[in-house]
Length: 136
Image (cartoon, rainbow, N blue to C red; front, side):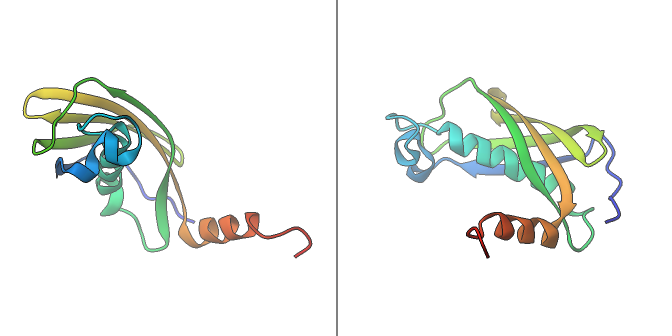
């Protein structure tokens, strides 16, 4: 597999208007009707995927392998948030992203996401092999 060339500084942005389905109550991560931390992480990961998507050759993908979320501010239903991902570091196949999730100028969360570049088919096959019953 030939690795694509990624340079630190790549950015991408995704947006979300918070709905009832995005709340801690709906996601089972709490009992309050505000943007849930699992949804913050999913939004941050979507921004990191968008950051590299245009440069990935056919058959190559990235998968999340580590994440750290600092969720600072509660965001009610109906509010609009953006996640801006920046590729901070490239270490071989490992990509480290810094993601700022904001509502306007207010920093809602900071998320650090590490992704691994890999061969899509080999990854899928390995996951299927790992789930095979013993003796097969």
